[in-house]
Image (cartoon, rainbow, N blue to C red; front, side, top):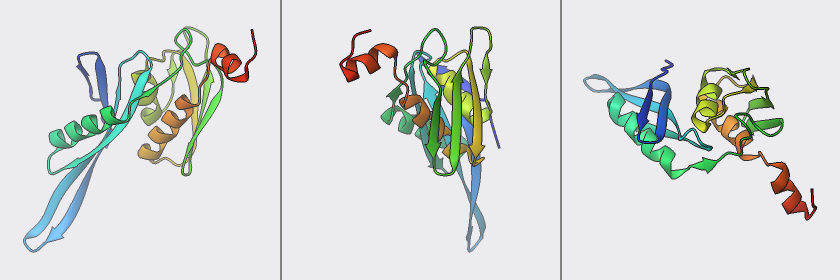
Length: 162
């Protein structure tokens, strides 16, 4: 089940990527619990994912948001897009991200779109290859965004002047 539920909490935007129901068979029947995959970002280059589990949906989402705030990472952006092409990998999931000219918009699937929009990227082309697992796609997208470097940063790391 995919939900495009987006809420603003101050400067943070949270979007629920997936909610799954889990059933445990007990003596009296089935006991259900819920898992929530949440992406949190401030739209200014900070983004994270969180995973929460609880007996009801709202507490699972809250736990996911709390988990996301613990693993926040910074993303390098340039004029609403990314500085260069990058490939993010996690498990069998692979996400290719390409910079796009202004006005292109976000060309991405559901899970990757949530990550890119939470980071504040407005123009990007993406393609997910391999796995269709939403959790692994989110992790791969964030892995790719963490690899981004600006020209100035690369020059400083190499000890070269531009």
